[in-house]
Length: 164
View 1 (cartoon, helix red, strand yellow):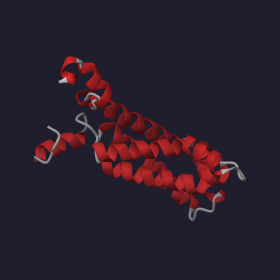
View 2 (spheres, one colour):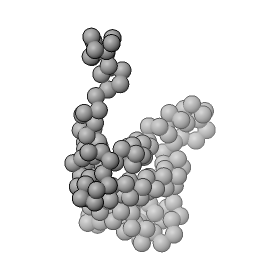
View 3 (spheres, rainbow, N blue to C red):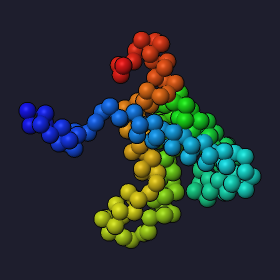
View 4 (cartoon, rainbow, N blue to C red):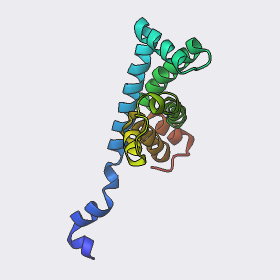
């Protein structure tokens, strides 16, 4: 009753689901653009590729040349797939794993200062961009890629889309 008299109260408290496609689309396409450009630079710009190989060697990654090529391909092709919304959940899982590896092998060791207290450590950790990417990927895995994606069209054609 109360919310019928004041509909804006309902929107303030529970949101407006009719617009949820927009942040899903923006997040998916933005992540896709970021990772495709990052992967492109690592694949096709010789100095960026060499920097990645050097980093892989520094952190003790086995087969640094192969791992650098693998990561660059995952980012580039995964980003392109996210942009169009194809195999979005699978791509989000793979890129989440890549971000966890980046955090564990590079960021914690080389970015977060040593000897700081737990609250400062948590502040540094949560400030890492990879943490935000993981949060967005988990969100995309749970919401799906949205109605403006190839995954959505395929699910409709197969009759398995619950979000009609």
